Image (cartoon, rainbow, N blue to C red; front, side, top):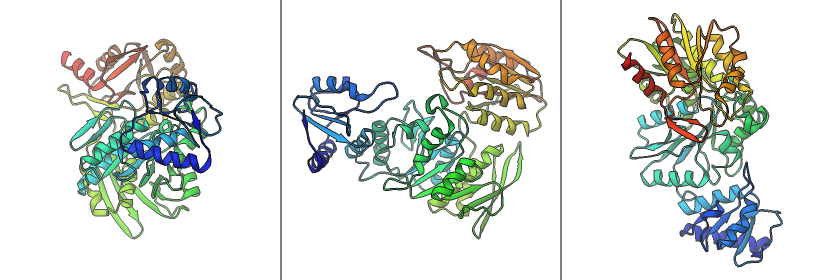
Length: 488
């Protein structure tokens, strides 16, 4: 395999990008390589792509892209190209292949532990109401006016992401509101793209099984805001979040705060909550010399922060106070504090909350609505951060009268052992029941309800499956609740 250096390498790289733009296939899985194609050896969380170079070559790869200084030398026909970062290289090739380097919708990237999905849909609603053609990519999937894709991940892999954006572009989409997860940022799934706006909702404990500690978790998210050629034009940042304050101090941006006082971060969108009850939220905003009011059917202080972030994005994209009124008609996102209507008159809600902070936020919101009792069904995911399980239990116990502890997605862990991990946090809760089967647990909670109670089924939200071992079975909390209530 021919190895080159310096200018020769760069010239060959540009020639390869031109070939990929004309249709030459690119693979990051060595087993999918066909003769003449490109193989990019990506560093992985489990195995390094470099160990699969030999297989790619044996399958006839015409080009192999590896990280610089890897010392890979293979005697075979073809071209070996070294790039500083193979993940960035894949992004460049994806952009060339799909034309997203030349023509791409404006991108709004939203990251944070909680609120990404709600903010992405709020931004979509806001911009659509202003006459923009908007696409959404995130946890619930990718959708636009005449298309949809279920990628299975909050942020799709790099090649798939560029392909989706190209489809949206070709369908006339001019702005994409997109969730960007910490995993995606760490793995550079958005390589080859430039965000017009980068927004931060908050940073609280999650995914430490992957990132190991909060600082590395934060630094992964901070990557979305870093300046440079690929850096965002605008930054919208929660100024009430300590990690958000770090970003504002470091790189600046539009700070969003629910504390109406002059902050030390310069440009700031300020808001005051004028009411927060069963009817929803009232907000009074101030930005420079502009002031406006907003009433929303969304409930809870956490949604006040989400509404504020979405308006910050709108301001960056040229919207004004009158445009913000469109948010008064936004009813919510599937699986995000979704009320399950029923003929029994019961107040039943489903929410995706699966972190301590998210549970605390949603339960505080419901508790403020003066229900007689708060009943909660929740579980913790298997093969994920074990340290957050008792913290999730503590957040639930803080606001609940009755808790039914059950399974979420146990994956490859023993469901009973997962519940054991959560139990210490539930100490002090007036009543705790354990039921490993999620459907049975939901039925038990419904049987316990009395008029004036509220039930929250937390953790899975919009998800339509439950993973037990290698098996994913159909399971959709809203559907299960409706089915159980119709049989009651």
